[in-house]
Image 1 (cartoon, rainbow, N blue to C red):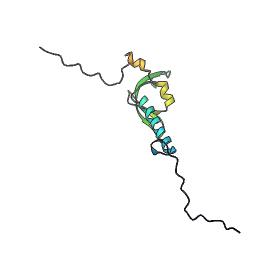
Image 2: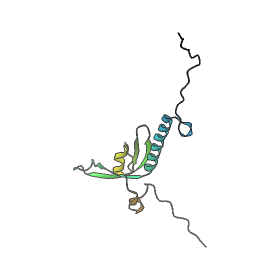
Image 3: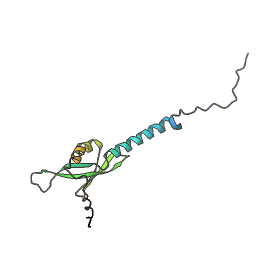
Image 4: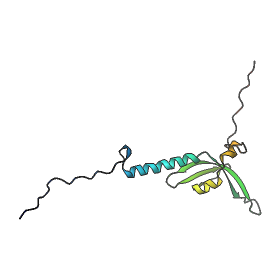
Length: 128
């Protein structure tokens, strides 16, 4: 009768599968998610919006439009921070933001100011 041989060497460690730059699949996925958030943020931050709110002074509850600007993005919640010209603000999701954001061609046509700030002063005049 032959006795089975016991393997006295320690078990081999299974190496994690590494991807580009020596990262694991989980790390690569986390980095890809982070980059997607950064791209989303950079696409909307600084963009102008216009949204209608119910005018409380109106007896019929008409909408009054307020302009604003996207000033921030929360990567944990996926919400954008919008600040309006009257000082109010709100946090909204991407779907609602896409409904109120002004298209680039409106700003380029000069129909609305790009930002609520005052225009720069005129250059100094040249005196001879």
